[in-house]
Image (cartoon, rainbow, N blue to C red; front, side):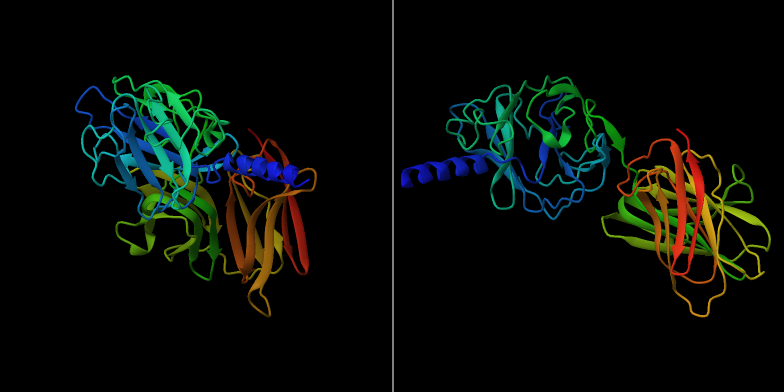
Length: 418
């Protein structure tokens, strides 16, 4: 009996040792050789967006039998993976790039101590350790060399490919300005299928399927109509390389937009750069006239000058008091990909009425919460991008928009076309 229990304990320990990388942080791309001065080398890690990799260590080893010990190692400074991309399963991904600071490599996050020929061209490898010095990924190129035998001997090609200390071996960098790149099974990396192809630092590899994330993850963009002004309010859940915002306005939906305020002249519109902290912004347009519908677009501008538009949304100042709760029909309808949803709240005896604006599918399941909070009397406009609460694009179909408060419920049908 005791002997059986001891064997069972050993078996359980072995399985836990071979547990999959809990962080889901892996080597994703390596450029160890190029046709010039080896000054475009870099190492790229991939993992779930917002994962804290502070204190992780990358160690470089020579695979030659005669050269033992680390060639060099570097410990990652304070860093959380940004929200850079979304894979085909809707998983938000981030990248960390270590390498030479060079104009052709604009997405390098850290280059301290990096020099030309920093990575060995062949029969060499990298080992990734977490902040507690546990191995969580390893890769060698050319061959495994002596990494599995005595340098450092803590990695192996023998256990399951999901083991933390499993050493993936790929062919060497071909020296033709290409990189060694991991395949499409991004966060379930099993070490197979690596290819040599053009470099993509800080982005999905050429063999990986997904979407590049926008510089700004916008969770709401609405207009609050007051007596003689319109206040735009928006919330970002994360920002990547965000320089700032511009406000565009027109008196027609599809044309005639001009910039009425910019981060360049209005400090309130400056972005947060890189952050995964929720940030609230507002801008008040006090140059509006009554009974004219104004259309607004919000534009975020990243450090490389890339501009991304959000909207438009519309609003009109009308000093006639709102007399009743109203959920207006969305516009346009049918729509693809965005539609504006507005509602009106009458004068209240007490301010700060709690309301919920949400979307249901044809099975009656709530798929998106557009707004859940308190409002005062007035008209509010929101934009919905046809995505659910997990940022996944919903399929074509008829959806129900619902406005709910303690004493009021109203709904409209909306048609999403792809």
